[in-house]
Length: 524
Image (cartoon, rainbow, N blue to C red; front, side, top):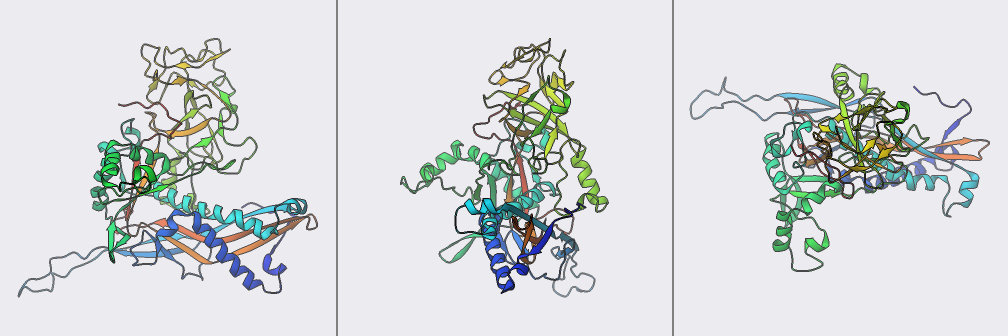
């Protein structure tokens, strides 16, 4: 456990505002939760047990403590023959299966610190509490939403659906993007796994039940640009520049399925995009001729704590402290993640592309940065890093003219496919030298960009909120440095059926392209 600074003085705001601390804390809690919900897409789909909502919320657990496991018990449908007419019922009764699963709640804390000089020259209307609240409440909402996305993506058991009859992430290729027909074909599979439609609209006073597909904005482009979707919008939408979906951008339901687009904005110096369609920025350039120590994917030159790479493959993502070593089940879960090999594209600001790979675990991806283990490069006679390979994943660059020359003295950025056995696309400029400002996009061995969408139905996951969010304060340097933040306790977990499979939702694992950051992908 990390040690606190020996000279730090931590006090609650309630202690500082002795006049009426309970009222201040309560107002802060309400403001914080309202602000957090405003950026959490899933907050609008929360409800209590039996509500038919995707995300079941428990708030009646004020006595729980950080590290406690909130238990949920599920029951199967009754099964058995029953009795007809004068047949005896005894011995023919129905029976049910029960299973209990848990959602561990834990502290989540965050804060800012300011000097009096900073506060003096900030925009008026403030004090440290207001400044902290405005920024942190949205960050808390993103944290809860992204934690849930990672849980649904990684903790799913037996509920992943691939397009075009694929069975694994490794088998996805350029043709396996998200399409309207793919969504239509996925719904019966989702229902076989226990998926139940949710109430999403009310028409003429009657509830309308339908599944909902939650799609990251990078993946929704393949839906909107499909000819079948465009034709449906053209002929089925209103004849109006303001109302027709082709002009308004409003998403149409597709074959009785609601579509929800998550729009992500890349903030400066923070995690980019979305756990369902991750990407990151490269802050420090390197190449196959760099020292192996310098071949690192990182988004900030000096920040070694922010989890820029936590959504990339190989990171042991935790939802509560100590989860990686809790028991044999979780140890096996994380071992599968940290022992695999992962691939990623690097797209330079000039549009040239390169392929790298890494392994999981703290030596490969510690959440903050990734240590590269291989770089695709045609000629590795004098690559200083020792990481150059002419075949990486399913890509072969042998004989190509791009990359580091045989003397190890200069790079060439050129089209692929010059070599007799090369399968590097001639439609792209390739390189093994990567510039600051490049984008990092995870993919599989075929180069297919890793994306996910979610089919959400009733009882997809549980959320547990414990008590009120509390305001905390911190002062240093004789109160010249003043800080404030919050501490909250919550937990999230997918729902589990009595047969051990995650229930209520499915993960659509598909390929795709980040618009403007297109990369080559093998088609077979």
